[in-house]
Image 1: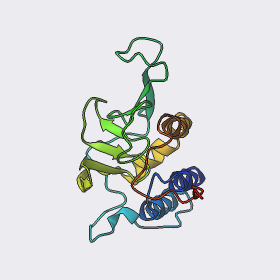
Image 2 (image 1 turned 60 degrees about the vertical axis):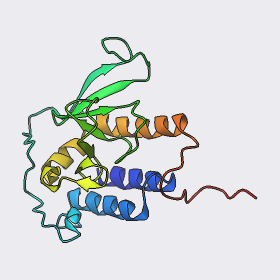
Image 3 (image 1 turned 90 degrees about the horizontal axis):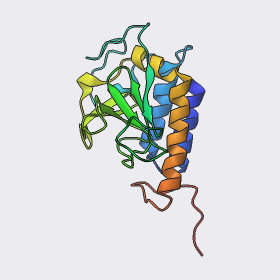
Image 4 (image 1 turned 45 degrees about the horizontal axis):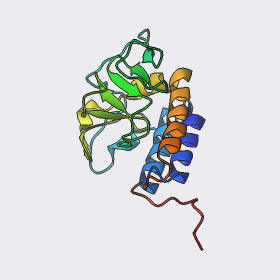
Length: 187
């Protein structure tokens, strides 16, 4: 889990999808979630916020609950006609859609209970929930337990890899809000 999260943070940073600050936050979250617990306190509690790493959020999930379930894909049963369209339900309330062109707050990100709801949105890499752009609802953050359950799911990790590739293929010239550090200069 730790290596996957750090690798995804590196890929996102190299592609210019996240800032340097978010890169380091994701690394710290990955270390916090790791079994050897290199970071003991919740790194999301910066900016003067108090965060209890074991405190559960509003969406309580038991060990036996299914983490990721495929709702539908491009083979019918959906209002979407795109064969690349795929939807997953995470923690029973967060809907992740493969063909989501929106990159905020992350690629991919979850929509609360329905892909058609604009807010709130979940950044699965940090567990932060946003009720509007740059407005986090700290009371809805995923707990350490919930994040571990999500990132132990191989289907979800595969989905995240696929989404990054899909996004780059669909929007190759999209200029993210941060500079692309590996982009070759045009002479």
